[in-house]
Structure formats: structure tokens, C-alpha cells
Image 1 (cartoon, protein in one colour):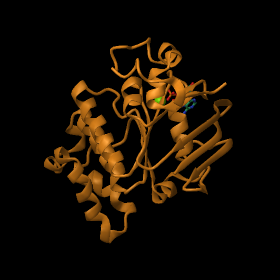
Image 2 (tube, protein in one colour; image 1 turned 135 degrees about the vertical axis):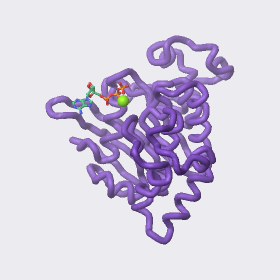
Image 3 (cartoon, rainbow, N blue to C red; image 1 turned 90 degrees about the vertical axis):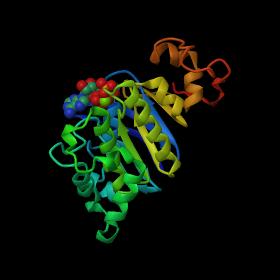
Image 4 (spheres, rainbow, N blue to C red; image 1 turned 180 degrees about the vertical axis):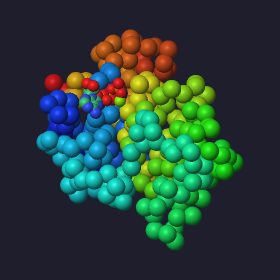
Length: 254
Ligand SMILES: Nc1ncnc2c1ncn2[C@@H]1O[C@H](COP(=O)(O)OP(=O)(O)OP(=O)(O)O)[C@@H](O)[C@H]1O
Ligand SMILES: [Mg+2]
């Protein structure tokens, strides 16, 4: 569905992405992990038309959409949830969803909102509440719900679990699995790397603006070099499957 090839992008004089490749499929989760400053957020922004690519291509369903404007990409079925500033705090939950539904044909708007609220009963119960008065975890759910109202086929998520309590993180990861089961593709950047790779179908370790490692989430979790360099050690406690997974699905980039 999404195919990013040899993407280069940056800010002013600074080249941040130095040739990144990424593939995302429907009904799959791709986890992008890597150190601070690696260019993870820049990658999402360059894919979503918020940072202008200098080289390389972004294809959505085979169409070249490199550098296309974000609002156009939203209408094509791709949406981004940025890490911060992703809800209107002075609006209620219902109003937040209505704003997002403006890209949907008028006759289908209410249906789009109702369907999303079914997925988030917690928000449905609080729909008249101001988004700014919600907890961090609830606000994250509003941001996810807002993105879903535009009926995307592909969601780009920047740090969906950042700053949340363990319980709220559980809830967000649960919702991500449900969203995938609806057939929607997800590309997520996460600091919570082990957890993200554990949920993801495929993963990408980004380092200094380049693909350092890519492969199935499981293969990356099981790769001792990835664990050592990017996951803070062997992490045998993180997953019982670590010892049995093989690195065969993994492609170290040079
Ligand atoms: N608007 C900007 N203008 C100039 N430089 C920027 C801008 N945004 C990010 N950078 C720089 O680009 C580099 C990559 O930043 P980016 O935010 O993409 O990294 P990241 O992998 O998302 O990091 P983190 O894990 O901290 O979120 C960093 O050196 C950062 O300082
Ligand atoms: Mg970032």
C-alpha cells in the first residue's frame, strides 16, 4: 500500500533522512524504532507531505505521491497522528470528531463518527466532555479516533504511547491491534521499542537517517545486535519467544 524508496529529507542545511526505504501493507503494523534524533518523526512528516522530500519516492497504492500536500493525502486515505497537538483541547470529543469528519462526504459523516465511537466506548460515554479536561491516555484515544473518522486505509502514528501510564499504554496497544484487524495499515514510531516490535508485523530500525535493520518484528526482537544496540540489552524478560525466534527474516542493511 505504501512504498517509500531512497527517501531523503531534512531542514534547511541539515539532511536528516539519507535514503530510507519502507513498505507498509494493509492490515499490518510497521514499527519504526531507533535512537533520539534518528529521524523517525521526520520520516513520518516527509511521507505525509509536511517536510518536503529532496530525493526518493513515496508511493501510495502505486501512485507517486512524493511531496503531495497533507490534506490531499488525507483524502487519498493516509492520515498522520502527530505526537503532540493532536486534539483541539477547547472542543468536546464530539466536536473534535466532527472537525475531522469534514473531509468525509456530508451524507456519510455521522456514520463515520458513529463507527469510530463504537470502537472507543470510553469516548462515546464522554462525548460532551472537553478534550482538554481528559487524561493523557484519553486524549491519545481522541487523537486516534480523530484520525480514524477520516476513514483512512493507512495511519501514521508518532509515539502513540509516549507519556502514558502503563494502563493507558495497554489500552492504546489494544486499540492498535483492533484497528489493524479492521484492515487498516499502521506505521508507528515508538520509544517503547520492544512492545512495538512485539505487536508489529514488520519493523525498521532507523539510525542516523538510514535503515539500520529491517525485518519481521519477531526477527528484530530476536536479533542480538538489535537488542544490544537499540533495545537496551538482551531483554530475556520481555518475551518468552526471544530464545526460539530466528534471525532468518531479517535483512541487515549495510
Ligand atoms: N523543525 C526542525 N528544524 C530543524 N531541525 C529539526 C527540526 N525537527 C527536527 N530536527 C532535527 O532533525 C533530527 C531528527 O529529528 P526527528 O525529530 O526526526 O528525530 P526522532 O527520531 O523523531 O527523535 P525523537 O526520538 O527524539 O522523537 C534531529 O537532529 C532534530 O534536531
Ligand atoms: Mg520523534
